[in-house]
Length: 131
Image 1 (cartoon, rainbow, N blue to C red):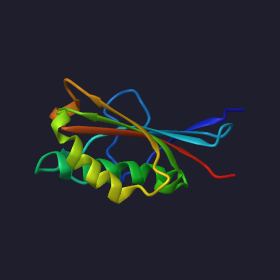
Image 2 (cartoon, helix red, strand yellow; image 1 turned 30 degrees about the vertical axis):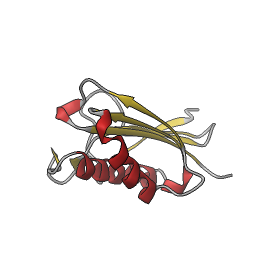
Image 3 (cartoon, one colour; image 1 turned 135 degrees about the vertical axis):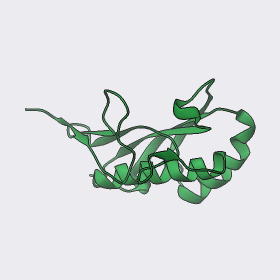
């Protein structure tokens, strides 16, 4: 019996390669979201305006995947942020703090030399179902 299944929603951008938007693991009660960039799923393009609008959209995309898996942003336990420019760290932190509440998820932030489609930020997260 398969304990994993792909999570799909048209409220987040479709996968642009051989991967799932998100994967639910029944055994662990964990939802793993693939990295999301600031693509507006309706237009299929990066939102204009730079890192903050991109970050806001990437977080919306993550939320859509988490909700499609039956969870909420409050269930997120781990986040990885990839930034094209670490000078955007402070601005992204402000937005991040508006989206996540205490206790904040564990997080890593990594400077990335290049992100898909020239994005300024990519966000991946893991959520845990409350039992």
